[in-house]
Amino acid sequence: FGGSAPTPNAGADQNLCGTTGSLNASALPAGYTGTWTSTPAGATFGNSHSNTTNVTVPSAGTYTFTWTISGTCGTSSDNVQITFGGSA
Image (cartoon, rainbow, N blue to C red; front, side, top):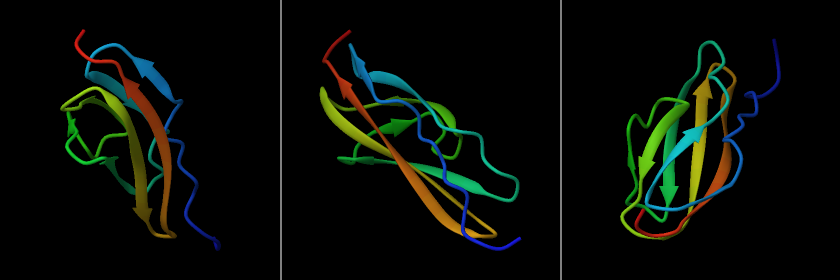
């Protein structure tokens, strides 16, 4: 097997009421690990290494979440944008 890391899918963009949401990335390929990060920083993940997890942000606004996978053929990532609309 040659080539590069598989391309992950971080899921569909969302518009939510409240400051809690769900992240639903594609499943991890065999031999790979994954990590969620947020821009801006400050999000709290239920499990930042699970492709499906809950996330809570400190305040309303638009956040970009990056799902990065690393494994035998390198590293690859995909982004999902979620707009949180304040208190639920």
